[in-house]
Length: 344
Image (cartoon, rainbow, N blue to C red; front, side):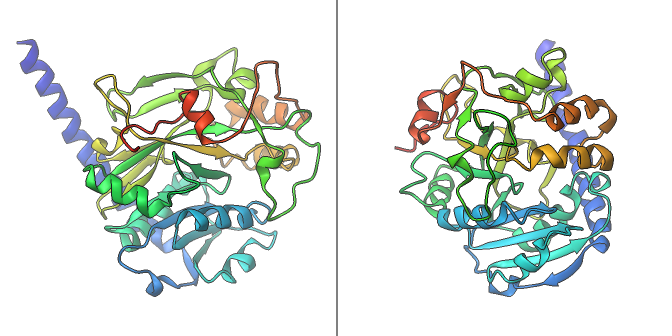
């Protein structure tokens, strides 16, 4: 009887999530009217190109390194939505020969934090491509990334019958106040953001979407210690062999169909995974936090995060005696933050 009940519950969950996915796709179809195409170079996309999708606002500082890093990994085309930047970001992106650019002044929060816009572009341009969905403050690394480009990883995933690849978002931070030292566009941000928390992570598998809900790192330690359930989630599924019927649920933390969220081994083993090195804590975060607190565009319950923004505006030092200095992907693997799995 228990087996029948479990089967019925799972069947109901699958039915409910199918309708949720259809709703998300319909939302994105409607939201396409909020996008104005500034530069369309998508005709240059080849059938086997790896694509990167991102939404940005005032990222002129990060974009040169972000684009360069992922070009070196093997991304062939970037599809970018600019959300009302006023720092020269749209002009910079329009000059990049491997970028197609859309612009909008509509609400980032009301578009599910840009996911609706990107889902429409993925429906239209990402079908059958391996698609990397990132924020501009994320840089993907994975086992052998310094010698094996993304096409090699994606070919291997195809041969394994895997259509998705998971990664832990790892907050990188400096030693000393966040405002110390000026980062210059195009320079390696990890020359200064070279510290991370190695071991204070907890995870659980969400029963509905079956994704890993991971929390921890310096933000949980410094800003959400009194209520760790409010801390940002760090697990993502950034790389997917896309189909026009796929849809991210919230950022790239979870995707539908839910089988794509099974980027972990359920039998106690390990699947190949990566890390998203997170550059949120560049010096500009101190001044931007006051602006983001006022805009209230980055969290569903933005007022709950007012204390978080205030703490960042106070220019904290995230470093502690347990902080670890980054040396490379092999170190991250030894610490259990990424895995080679069967990719030897």
